[in-house]
Amino acid sequence: MHDIYAAQRVCGFGTTIFSEITRLAMQHQAINLGQGFPDFAGPPWIKQAAAAAIAADLNQYAPGIGLPRLRAAIAAEWSRRGWYDVNPDTQVTITSGATEALFATAMALIDPGDEVICFEPFYDAYVPDITMAGGIPRYVRLYPPRLDLPHQDLPAQSTWWFDPAELTAAFTPRTRLIILNTPHNPTGKVYSQAELQQIAALCQQYNVIAVSDEVYDQIIYTPARHIPLATLPGMWERTLTINSTGKTFSLTGWKIGYVVAPDHLTHALRQSHQWITFAIATPLQEAMAIALEQAASNGYYAELQAAYLERRDLLWSILKNAGLPPLPVQGSYFIMADIARLGFTDDLAFCRWLTSEIGVAAIPPSAFYAREQTVDTLRQPEPLLARFCFAKRLDTLRAAAERLERLTGRIERDPS
Ligand SMILES: Cc1ncc(COP(=O)(O)O)c(C=O)c1O
Image (cartoon, rainbow, N blue to C red; front, side, top):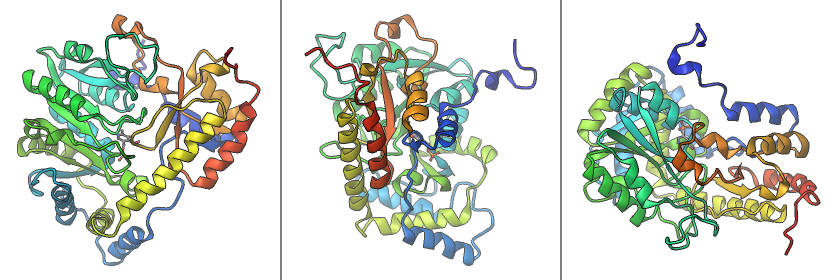
């Protein structure tokens, strides 16, 4: 029976796992390595720019499509990185974070009954966005880098990977969109050129539009290299690239996101965006314009990457020493760790226990898988993992290490 106070499109949603784990973390004073946000301050020069913008009275509605200065800075960034000569007036739109960008895109491009492909595990907003627009999600599995893989004929993979045959099978004449996320949350995978080429070829064969969520494009670890899907031959015309300055500048609460797309897709996106948020906080847009302008030459990106590399390596060794083997991370600020040896049969129970009994919060990756499994995906069950976020001060990570030491003794040791 439907809740008579909620529309059908929302009544099945429930509360997100992030709210539950955050509440539990607060209740038990756990160190929160669950939700993905930095616990350190954003750059002072960007905060000063926002304060100056408020003092200068940039406090009324911005143009709906975004401040010209910010759109110009984004276009300049695309040129600087050698990606595309973007027109800031007709090909860049500022949104309330990547979250609104995703929702506005779904509303602008999906008709009821359209199929939308996403890789599973997926960032949790994708599926509600698809279904609220009346679309039907189709899942393609990303498999973890393990040796016990079902596809013996594929070369051993050192990162998360998908089966090209499964991807091809997901495309049908009803496919409207594919949603890609690189670098990927929650796995830390960065799609390779060869993988992007396979996706691009199928998009062109089936006349499918790609939505590429690239919010972690600046949080990447060599030798991995970020390649925007839109830069592949034949893809600019059919790709919307979504980004979020919140991740790049460690100011997630400002919610300044953006979409770069060709004129016709930008036009469609703006049609829905104008009725969703209309315009985004003016002084924060001004400050993010200054952030992008200055970061291009002040060494900020190199510092960001070095700092994240140190945090990644620290959390990686902490998890390893605690008996939770971590999987490789090429990008983003998340590590997936193998929890199988703790004797739990489901990741939610493990994460609740870790938060309340050990005092370290993590997110159960089952939140990033579709509930109704198809027969196809059931042939390999979800791996038993937990997602830990390392967008945290080194002190926070070290404090978590002390608590994770309590796991020693509970780990089922390998018989070897
Ligand atoms: C893959 C991915 N896409 C989108 C978002 C949302 O970004 P924003 O905070 O800019 O709305 C996040 C935030 O965690 C994310 O991890």
